[in-house]
Image 1 (cartoon, rainbow, N blue to C red):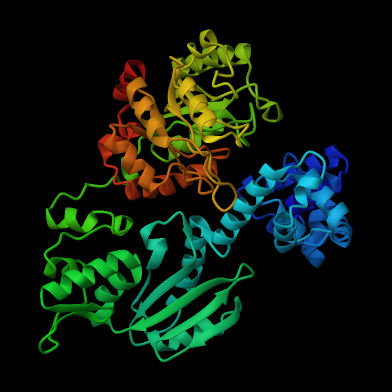
Image 2 (image 1 turned 30 degrees about the vertical axis):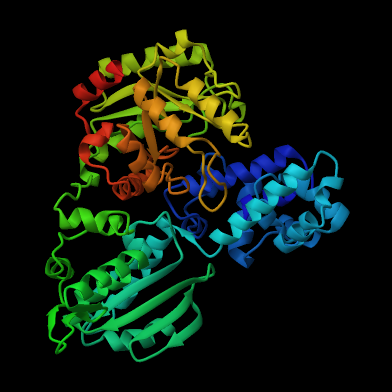
Length: 567
């Protein structure tokens, strides 16, 4: 609510200081490890004890708890409808553009915006033109394609909440999620839950009466479908006999194309495959059903990890026994991309190091922003060099974990690095990232990144395609050329584990691996709790067929340091 109110205030052209106060408070709350509601309800606690929460914001928080909104938000919603917030998700439009559209054409919905673009009226407004109309129409199509999809953590939390609820039903033996969540897709459209045991059928009734079941989409003998929570995620719950569990897990995990290929393979062997089992065509005798691994075994295949089931060569690899031994989360030895309070992080270096040590990591690289990101208080040359000296002193004293002095250095519009090479050379680990001028043409963006790769100090290319899931498409660059040049220059490609990014995605990872690329999986953490996002980076790496030797932060510290200096 605070964040959205800030957005509406920006559309209205209101005071920047107040807008920042709402957004900063939203960021503080998002990063705080405790539930704010619990603090507000505790007479012995003060929410103003949280750094960044003043008396004004505290009063707003109390008002939100009391009635579900607050006065400033209500005022903004009288001026602009809530649908105006959707317009901010369209690439190419900022708050000022949206205010202009609203003022001239009363545009307040995506449909309104599309109509204005198709009528070529957008180009009639100041500082807008035909190219922007085309870009906005492409962005609208992309937005609609992603509508109704959810990020992995949201899907995981929903699954965990429902699993816990379902297990309370007497007679339930197994509850498992399948579908795109099990395959680790970057976004999830709906959730498939499979339930076995004598109480499985009773679960269907309980699910439809869950307090968060806002709409019952269907209820049959073996399946119930609901829209769950205010977000309206569709959840399908299926009750199955234990003897069909393996076949059902295989079938409902998908993907569709993977399953079609398996069914065709079964037919060639005189078998039929469905959610109930693998059976002979003549006579219907079941040959496998209860255990998923047996389904693959009877089809003459090694068991295929769910992340690979996209019909992209995994069946042929399983037949020839050449599936990769995929990377495991426990093999990650450190995190090489994070931010502290020096720039836009929410914790100190020492707090980040302590949290990483608690996870069993051997090392971290602290990589705050460079000076171009002025709003993040980015480091200039002097601060970067001083930081490197500080880290050397920290390591001499010892924190129980090795700290690498790093920087996420902005790649400027012309492809040059934001800080001088002399300053960058003082640091242990430099990530080069694009944070600005993201609307460049493909050739121009590709040349920009290729020039940045010439920097002798760069060791990793951060979030290489710049995408933000459900919000911003990838840069239109020639990734094959960039990956090939990164290999030639010894620059590693980052798999950014932030669930909003998961950049780069599986197919690009696999293509880059084929060129000889090496990778680093980082969380881009701005708070210690963000370290837990490493799991999503590992899932994404697995979807790209990566093994332990492909990922540099699986190396012990000594080998990692040698690899950094050799690159």
